[in-house]
Length: 119
Image (cartoon, rainbow, N blue to C red; front, side, top):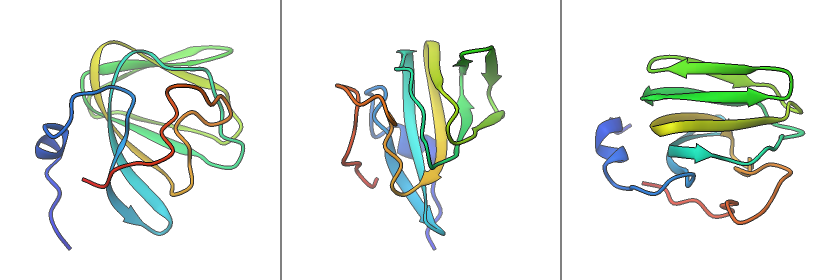
């Protein structure tokens, strides 16, 4: 039952698109990631994802629309919905996802992180 300081945890890494685990509850991981640029289009057939903006802003693109998110806002991407996060400048994001969620979903590729560090 330790307190997690988000600023402290975000200071431990500088790379983008590489989530770190900061907590686990009820089969869910709480992850922190820094985004910059465009990610890959992907979907998760069996998992919903929550993206909460801690610092900065980013755009979640969907095939039919795009949604801009700012600090203090979050979006839940339902399972099966294709999406692509885009950050024009660095943004800090907290994610809530089932433990087995792969960051690139069905897309795979060089940005896939199949082993995440617990910080």
